[in-house]
Image 1 (tube, rainbow, N blue to C red):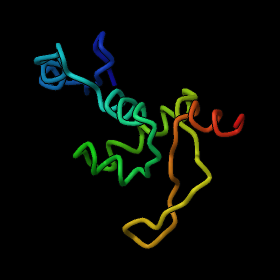
Image 2: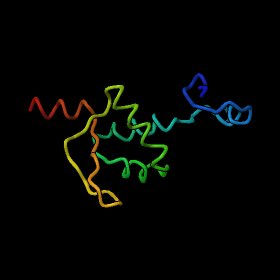
Image 3: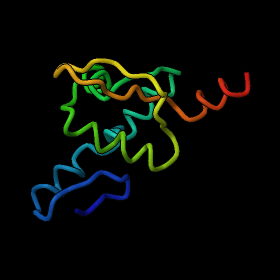
Image 4: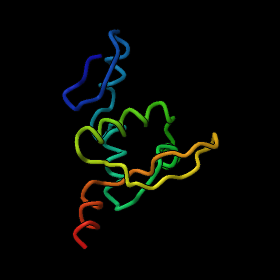
Length: 103
């Protein structure tokens, strides 16, 4: 997958690249949208992030994983029941969990 200078991904077709570059000023990537949501000192599941951003979970989950791998998000240790009845991770900013440990 290719990426524009702004980090917006596109497939290996000319139409996909043009769509990624269309109206790129002011366009936030899903990763940036997720990061901005967590900058508000919240703890959320992937489902909640998906709902808050009106984006499909299949688009949000990889961004959560990327932000975890970047050291921005961490497992809060909390769990909530998801829509399928399973326990799912509640995510938090790393800075928020570090502040709690020092308190």
